[in-house]
Amino acid sequence: MPYIYWDSTYILVVIGAVICMIASARVKTTFNKYSAYRSMSGMTGAQAAERILHAAGIYDVRVQHVSGNLTDHYNPANKTLNLSDSVCNQTSVAAVGVAAHECGHAIQHARGYVPLRLRTAFVPIANFGSMLAWPVIILGVIINSRSSMMLINIGILLFSFAVLFQLITLPVEFDASRRAMVQLREQGILGDQELHYTRKVLTAAALTYVASAAAAILQLLRIVLLFGGRSRDD
Image 1: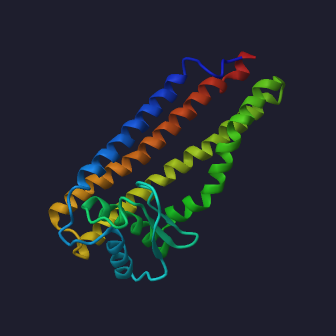
Image 2: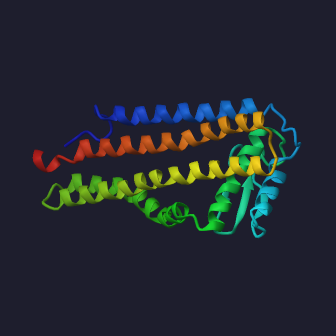
Image 3: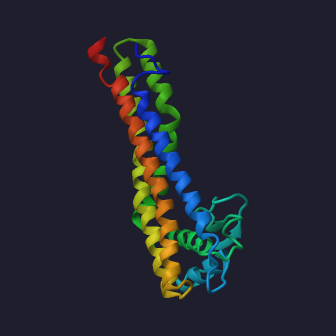
């Protein structure tokens, strides 16, 4: 039986973790750097968000403060745009850019953007897959019977749902940043040089989602390498 806790394929998990750490460090460094640049408009993240939402004809989304650093998110369930300590009342180009990005998600929701709807619908499936994948695979290894390979394949399929969710997330995040840049320019919230800085912040943030997707794919590859050929070895 393959050694579950450590084996040569574990290097794939290590690579994925390193990729995610690098992406996380980069977004924090980039955000901190451009947090030092005050926007010429003097608008806070919350004020910029209000202007963008109203310019897009959206009046039923509530902009509110949420504690934490870079914990910003849009909640389509209750239509709240939640801005963190480092964004809500800050006037930097980084803060305004992040707030605009979350507005991008609100605009996606209001316009019925298909990838966002698909991602939202896929959340419970992805959570279900993440929660049960490893227990099902391990059960398949333990019972060592004719049905073991079927359980292992089911576990791999369940984990694939979580990977698919990561992939679905990518176009949603990139499109939200695109919408943010358009709105910041059209509403005159940021100037050309400020938009250049903001793009760097949003690009760094987007790369964290790319890193998460890459890590998930590497984890799936590890699972397939560990257990996919079990029927041939038994």
